[in-house]
Image (cartoon, rainbow, N blue to C red):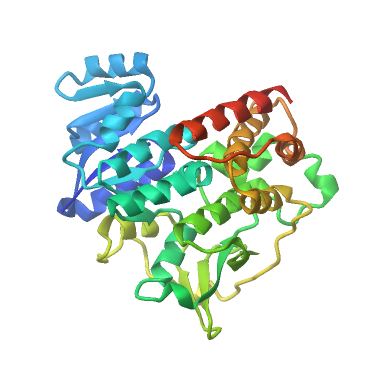
Length: 378
């Protein structure tokens, strides 16, 4: 039986994880939950899954939830998130909190010797070298939950890392794939939040519209699969049926395919190394007979190019880029800047950043705070 803790149980990945746990029944036991502040949903989840520990980052909300659920231990603040991440009964931690908020508890889970199902991009984008060093030191499994990285992970099962010619991450292209430059000038928040294939939170949805999300995935793939950036490519695949591909040195290729749903990669992580009967319908090839592949436009979607540049330079730049982008996206969501300004302002900020080495977790957090402060002022 897998006993799981979920960091970010009220978000889209967290809720999908609980849906899979519900489907798998007695194979999964939810022992701990954590979220930022949505205690109404947390209360509902707690009544259904009966965890032994709940972490709430917002301390006032934690106190309120404790009154509602006096029979369950409620832990507050970052200490509460870390308590859920390192909870002794858990043998798998689902890291699904968005933003750098999820980095510290993810590190805590690895230090505690827990296998981690990773959906928090920031953990590897901001602190990839540190995280992967800890993973090797503790001998834990880092199981990707993103559909693209899960696809690569599945294609590589039983394969030889030295035989990889390249990996190809697929991108839907987002809602503005066919937009002209003039049309991109008119993008609104409501436009950016209408993703054609996936239902996600607002921040990641905007990142998909700028292709920054794919850029972050490139950086993640670099760390997860220990590949040079030159072997990681992006191709636009509007149907989101092929989730990613691996080409080997003999030029044969493996691809992982399914309907665009997070249920499959989440269930694979929860049951790994086994597979269990899924809850989705069988794939219908006759209804999916037209699969397109297009080159990404690095000029119209400059965030993808910026991500390649950040990981190529390395050091503190990926961490800086990630945090600055998060602030710029939030400003866009709050109608304080235009969509097209996100990459422009981000490029300006990155060009002024003095790259330094990242040696400890405190370095990551310091760079993150610096980037946020500077992105709030530009």
